[in-house]
Length: 296
Image 1 (tube, rainbow, N blue to C red):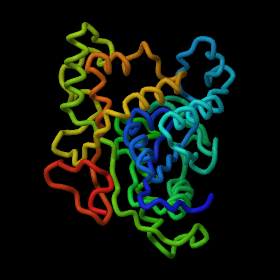
Image 2 (image 1 turned 90 degrees about the horizontal axis):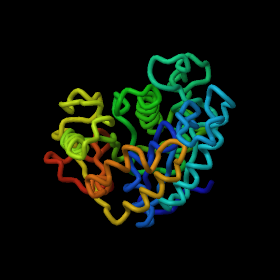
Image 3 (image 1 turned 135 degrees about the vertical axis):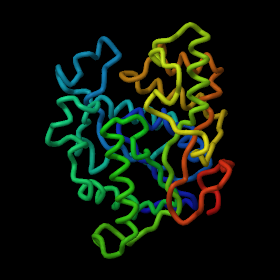
C-alpha cells in the first residue's frame, strides 16, 4: 500500500473487531470525513467472542470455531459505515488469536495474542507506523480499559512499537524511522459512567452495571482529572450506531449499549475521551483539548 499523502494521519490500535466502534467510532468517522488518513489496526479476529445471533451460534469457538472469518466481514461493514478505508490486522488476519477473558483456558493457547512476544508483535506495528507516518497514535491504558488480556497486550505492543519505530537502528528493513508526535489512551471519565448508572437505574435497569453503586468499583474508567481530551461529533452518532449494528454477532440493538444511548438521548455516544500520555506535544493542563491533532 502506498504511503498516505494526507496532511493529518492517525493510527488506532484495537484488540478485537467492534472495540473500535465503542471506543473511537466518532473519532474515526470525524477524521475520515475531514480527509485525514485514518488507519485501524486490529490485533485479533475476536474468535472467542460470544455469538448473539441465534442462527449463527454454530460459529462459536466451542462449536465450528468459525467466528473469526465472519467478524472480518462485520468489521469491513463497520468501516464502510464510518468511512474508513484503511483497516488492517496486526501481522495479517489470524496471525494472533483472541485470548478470551482473563483467566480462561483460551489464555493458554500457543497462538493467542496474550502469549505473543511483545517485541515480535510490535515489529508488525512498527512497519505500519513507518509506512503511515501518523502524527497521532491511540490505544488502551495499562489496564486495557477493563482488564481484558488482549487489551492489555495491545497497550504493551503499541507503546513498544512507538518506541521502536522511532529508533533508526531497529529493523531498517521495515522503513525509515518515525516518531509519533502524540500518543493517546482511550479513557472513560468516572462522571460519564456515573451518568450511565444513574440513567439506567432511573429506567429500572440494574443488570448492565450489576447493581454497582460506585463507579470506582466497576474496574473501568478513570478519574475525570486524568482526561485531557474530549472530541465531540454528534453529527457522527448515526454513523457510529450503524457501525455498531454491523457487529451483529457482538452488539444487539436490544442490548445495553443501545438501551444506554436511548436513556441518555444518544448524547453520550457523541463525545469520546482520551488521555494524552506521550509524544512531543505536552498535554493540556485543564482537560480542554478538543482535537487529537491540536498543537501539530
